[in-house]
Length: 229
Image 1 (cartoon, rainbow, N blue to C red):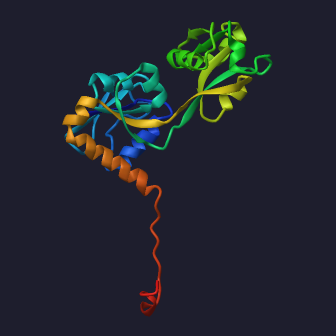
Image 2: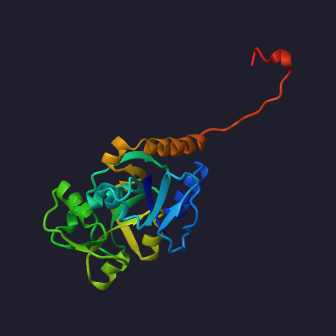
Image 3: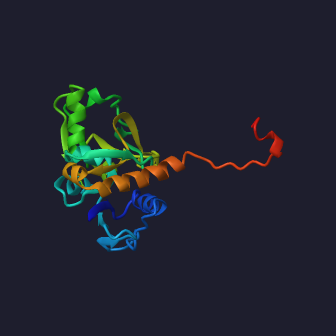
């Protein structure tokens, strides 16, 4: 039996449920408002685990789940040693470095000696280290990151955005992209080497993604024209 960890709520939950349904593996229960933690499908060898998207990389890395679906940003943030199998083509987002609209800060280098609040401290530190920007204090917060510059906690934030609407509402402007994230099917490396069923799931999901790029066309024509067509 293999265990598949999927997001229990949030923007990745519904697309993930729909993907498995289209792949012939409908998940029994576990709606967005459900408190259900474990679910079955029509394959008796597969069990689904509902978890926070941020926890899925470690669940898969440690073998609590054999495969899972989550964002690459979360895999990188957690430093999870997993195999990335398929880009699932939904839920893409960016981590951006942003400051208040009224701020005089124009580029990342201007943040030397200042504070940056984020839910992604490791990725943020890596960004400043890579760009050789020193003396930046990274403050980890667990939510409401957008408000921190307005209440004096930090001069800037690193936060996830997909449409930019939240930034605009909170009067923030992006000054750089820190990380481009995609949603992937990830696997535990040991499980991948020993569990053939993982490849079956991978193939099923790939078939759905491939089918979305195709169209079925029917044409009526005279029988005598068939050879030319």
